[in-house]
Length: 403
Image 1 (tube, rainbow, N blue to C red):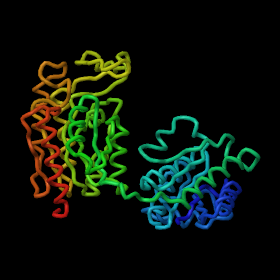
Image 2: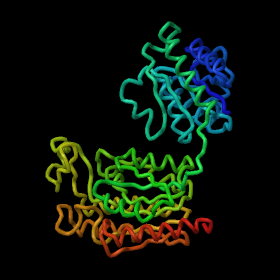
Image 3: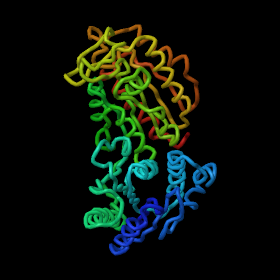
Image 4: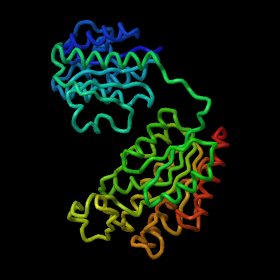
């Protein structure tokens, strides 16, 4: 059984944090109170703020020697991340605080693996929590009243959170004999036929996790990869790169493909739906793009066709990251179109733009024993292309030990 790490600023929230620790102990779990205050030492901490600060890459002075509070909080977040990742006895993490401590603690929580319990009691939990949660299984509980002293309300809220954290730490989820190797796949509406065929061909030997490529979808897949919960990736739909580079509403981060680079997982990928950039309703399309080739997907989503120049940049972005992958890689180019609406006779059919995409990938590709670039004379949603994805995945998944 791991311990509950209770994290907060003991210089300002000592009473609340020690109360949470008391409840965790009464619930039968071990508790470690971690002080991340930057104003001075607080009472009751098992791990003092200076001890945490020493985990910063530049040492404790980079955290505790700052006169600007925002700089100090950001530095402490880096230190806390390194501290928690260095421990092998974390059963759950419980954070308490306002805006500053929420930003600090959730940054460290986001670096922890999927499946490790993470609970943040916060004054901002009833608003937009996407920046704090990201693609992670991080739970946020609204504090109702400010985390500023113990009273009848805060004791109930903090007590419930402490009992929840203790319960999660005391009761790890058992593994199941039915668990099969997990495969991550990316999909968009315009690549659904391809993904459906691949899923059917893979059968019941694998457990398929499909991620909608809406920005956070790709991040979620890669978070699972970083957490050791995937055995391979079939990255059919890399459209989030287009939104990142051109300015759409479903962008990847600069770390797209980073998890595969770090883990060396078997990777089969393609260029699904990079013919489009996503916006909201038609009237929300930015003024510079309103004269471009647009397609109203539905009342809330408007698609914009990427140009040859944009496709060239997209291809260059992708291939640079593919070249850094050290595990087994197969990247497939569908020469007859990359989405449902990029097929011949469809509104986004643009052979010159596709050609620029393919050329950028060919030109940037660096040959290596573990990587192979494969061109398929078919559309991405064709049976031939789906079969090629599956065949190449079987090839590298079974031979991963060679790389």
